[in-house]
Length: 199
Image (cartoon, rainbow, N blue to C red; front, side, top):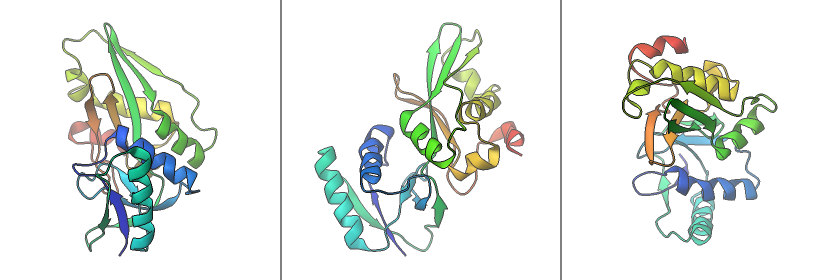
């Protein structure tokens, strides 16, 4: 089986940062490790330990460094598929402007991406100009396929390579709003008519 370290309700970006830093500090290869989809949300890859004692030690240090006592060890069950690969998904930050949206990779994702595929990430940002009512309705509806292209431009990855990371998540850090998210179940289940752009 195996063990992972979890947080009640799922691990958001803010809580994942100290976990990421601790893994790097301890010498884990975040671009190629034993991993499992987060048991509660299935929206993020988490590292897997073979022994409970090792996971408990990591959780104890994480509680100390993050000053948050809610971290705990979760024993994996039969339905928890363990795989080998990079931490993910790729996190894309988005900001709404009057005439469109600005996109860029979040630092943790950029770090994993550069370790997995050195030199591949060459675009710092992408701007999509579009006069639209509301904030993200167009990107969540008929314009959703645009986000596939934005993720590919920012990362330099093919659709298959993006799937290695568990797809991508577009997030507005100012409004604390997820614009688009994919599941980690070994594929990018993006939904709707946009699925065709991944094939």
